[in-house]
Image 1: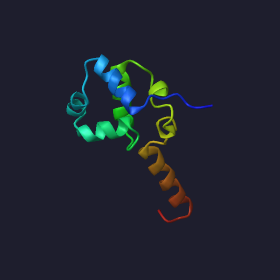
Image 2: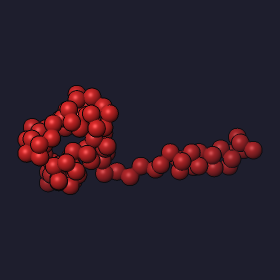
Image 3: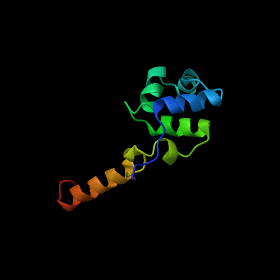
Image 4: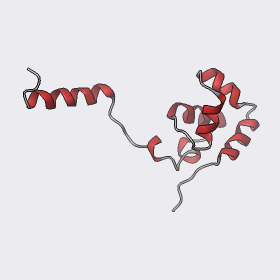
Length: 96
């Protein structure tokens, strides 16, 4: 079964319907026009940009970027990972 998603062109049309340009999003998020376009067309990935697009076109992330698995995998926070590393190093007496 194919995961739901919109193509970059479909996203662009939805943005136009909501009177939003790629440049508007880039300006507000503090990134380049090309970065927004690359996320829309799956040439680069940014959960922040993807969520902003979904908010603006009023569709859930799953429906727009359902094909981008990394947006849905749970990653440990850096603090949690650092604590795991510290624990492991103490366990092997690398850290005292």
